[in-house]
Image (tube, rainbow, N blue to C red; front, side, top):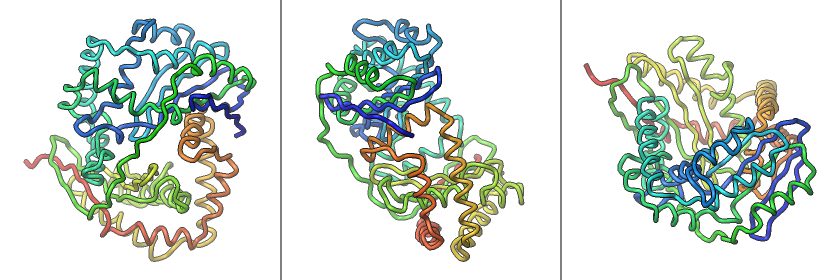
Length: 410
């Protein structure tokens, strides 16, 4: 997709992609997340993401929440290991209102003590709810083992202990040390001319004091393979296995994205779904995932099944992995895999909010935004040899860390 870019004097970048729709989508993406938290402060980035909606120098919580919702718009935010994102969808006439609110909550929040205490209770409830869902909790527990000793292993929500102990000074110190203006992108997809977009961005973000980045992230060590089993009051067994892999800049990233999609990615026709769910009826959910990060990546396979079928599911997974390594895809099979993946990417562009966030993330990661055709070209450039080499390098169970949740013994 075509886009225009304007950089403010303080380093904040304004990215605009044109759209003919009457609805616009905007985001502010900050290149800081849970991996940037100090030791003993797990969950702080997520806590701040909640707090910025609570009070600013000129708005109460209700005024913040109603500023966009009163005109039918949708306002939300989320935190990942490397990013904090605020986003909104709104009718085109409300561009100025949206960007002004973004600026207000990001740079004028006051973080009153009473709001902090209320939000701690909300997040503690969120942690409790999350822990009641083993298919969700296992991801963080697996990554805690995979990245042991590194902030990448932190649960994004934090722990009960860390959340209870957050102070206002913790919040202010983290923002000052991490919300760097040269690592903030404002993304906008809407039916505007770029001159208006630039002027609106300048008006609401141009006076933000420059705060440039200097700190570097702690790189994760590659740890030996391990297996961890924990027992919980659940009915099914849950398993996650995988390893650290290619980062977002790695030349083999496109090949691994393709391999992941073929093996256990989106859709019911992935190899693992067809062979383990459809053929044997063992697991309701079985999938693989590849998440490239700035300096490493995560490849993993997840499934949930009855405890007595757990070992058989593992055996079948390794059988499919060994088959893929022992008999690489031929040209026709690889082309079918490419066609499927390319089609899914094209359809995903219909999610307009997801698209502009993805473009903003690409700008932060790579300093540019690939066009859809450039993305397709990278996928089509993956050869049968590339595919086979990636499978041989990564699909090795001797390298996999495995994490299990099993029901409590009777």
